[in-house]
Structures are given as structure tokens and as C-alpha cells.
Image (cartoon, rainbow, N blue to C red; front, top):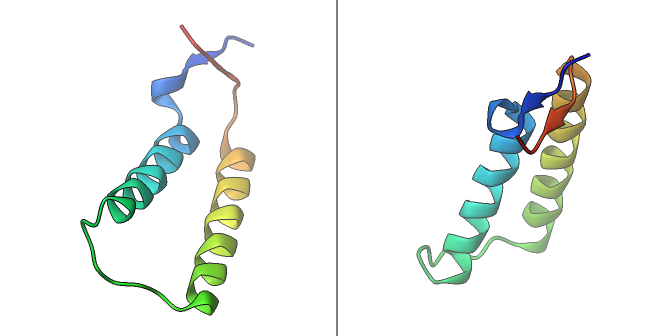
Length: 64
């Protein structure tokens, strides 16, 4: 099976979006500080979505 380029991967873009949101928070873009329970729930949701996206994916990715 031919590998698709990484930029066509939904999982890749989901991870990039999540990382950008976290980086923006580190630099003070948003002053909202969630409580620890919210942080845990978001972590679980992101993990489950990443797993679901991986199962939906039908082909491997490459760095080409």
C-alpha cells in the first residue's frame, strides 16, 4: 500500500492544532486557567480522538 504524505493526515493536523493551542497558552495568549479536572478531561478526549483517527486512517503516512 502506498503511503500518503503526512500533510494529508487528519491525525497529523489534529495534533498540530492541539499543540498550537497549548503553545499559545504558554505564551499568555489566553489568561484562562482551567481547573485540574478539566485538564484531565481534555487529555482523555484528545487521546480518544487520536485513537479514533488512527482507526479511520486507511493508509500509512510518509515524510515525502
